[in-house]
Image (cartoon, rainbow, N blue to C red; front, top):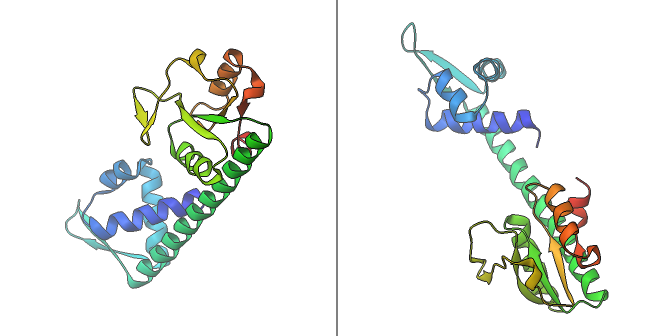
Length: 196
């Protein structure tokens, strides 16, 4: 989904629930500049997706038209499909790296990360069943993540265990730091991240 489509979807959803919101309020809610908000509203008016009702010289309200609701639904379906496509791509990438780690003879695995990709890697690890889950690394201020232990000292890692690196935030810097602390042959990264 393109940035413009995301803004349009968010704007239509916002106006549907808060039609009296000022342009400044819309700008604040969407996290975009006031001028960009004005341009998006003008575009939606021109396309017939919203109507503007003047309430006073300084205030107006916007209502989403039937055509605007249809467009919102179209964009929402597109957003959901994009999310599902990304999830499927992530699952495949994680499953491949888990299988590769098992082929390399590792018996256990640690997952470096505490975001959605780390959860997907954990599911892939469970699904594969060949590597024992040892815990998570790189989790800030947590003792557990998805009911698994968080290991704070990387020098206590069990031998013959791979580190499956999934941390999106700070990649590749955090990956490079980890490679300075641990033998690179024990660190594997899903192709989804290496293409960044």
